[in-house]
Length: 98
Image (tube, rainbow, N blue to C red; front, side):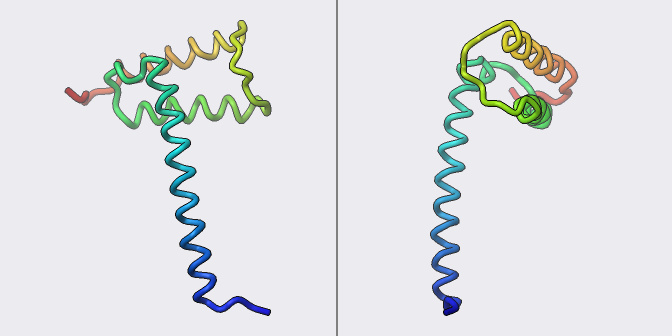
């Protein structure tokens, strides 16, 4: 039996609420990590920061595995590369927020 359109709309609204809550949790988690890493103190354009985050995301996706959170030589190198990317992005930024 097919669902009436009103039931489908209710389900969509419920799923949108769930999506919004999940995105909020993810944003808060990533924001806490970014602040711990010192990104809150760096003056950088949003576009440059987004590009650096996309680069980091690509590295984790390409790795195919989840990080354990433990530091090793490879992770330390990736972290320093990310910092260098952010720093160079900040230098090339142009308009900076005060």
